[in-house]
Image (tube, rainbow, N blue to C red; front, side):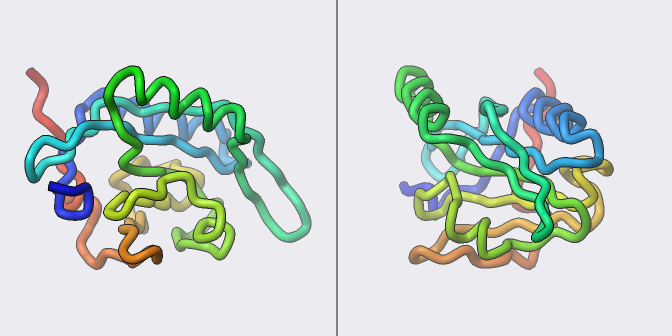
Length: 159
């Protein structure tokens, strides 16, 4: 089974870490969170949310967030050691959620079937708040998913 065919099941701690990371932007800067997990049959279990070291930029053209090559190397090494794969990238935008040309060109999650989740309003209303958009990588292009995020990413019940 490939990542492309999986449904996503995230642990509550992944959701909490992701929502907590949004506060790092303090309603002024974009924030990037990476989700790691394991494919088990037709399910992708998202077991870890990573907040990589990142640089945020505020320019006349807008905002962006950058994770440098050394940090990506460290993330990949940690995922390999944990026998996990990068399954999604989640980042905030200042206003509405959309996949920009920068998001398309400089994506971090590059495996077919990976998710790219864009959260509006700097994540102020959380991962499952209004206006969140989810995209899935298919044949090298990000495709907008029409279903709400809650039907794409299920939250695993507390044990």
